[in-house]
Amino acid sequence: EDKVVQSPLSLVVHEGDTVTLNCSYEVTNFRSLLWYKQEKKAPTFLFMLTSSGIEKKSGRLSSILDKKELFSILNITATQTGDSAVYLCAVSGSSGDKLTFGTGTRLAVRP
Amino acid sequence: NAGVTQTPKFRVLKTGQSMTLLCAQDMNHEYMYWYRQDPGMGLRLIHYSVGEGTTAKGEVPDGYNVSRLKKQNFLLGLESAAPSQTSVYFCASRNYRGTMNTEAFFGQGTRLTVV
Image (cartoon, rainbow over all chains, first blue to last red):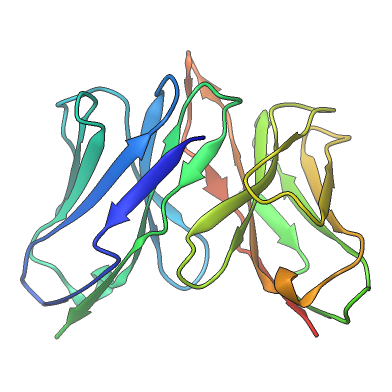
């Protein structure tokens, strides 16, 4: 059974802070790890990582995967109130091509 | 670009009633998924499909049935609704790019309340 664990469950920071969100996983025949941001409605895609040690970056957000230690981190620098959301991590393996999500990290950025 | 469209967006059911949620995608994706999202639980996979005419059980399939008669549509049925099925339901689809799956695209969700 594929498993994804995210930490922390929730986090409150002030604008301008840097945050690191964690995602550890167990999956048969790992294929990819995906990060999503969810505000009030549907999750929106941030990154997909397939190779270890290669950082994906988009503006103030970046993510990296460690396939040996089975985890990924999502970094957000110079946080803004618009970054307030639930951040979801998901993994895909070869066991029927399911996409398994963690419970998410709820980030609140205070002015 | 419609992407993934779910209908209805909201629904209130009485215990024991049945209903079908429709998910339609116009991206010619092979894979489609139904998830439910409850407070503090993340997204839990109900059923999924890897192609037209195929379906498989996910993490929480009990009380639900699905069908994928056409590639673009994935239907989720509740035969006899229970209050425990009160939730927000999301449909998603994705495809291959080379040998890798692409990211999943989500519908806007269906908020279902069973009273």
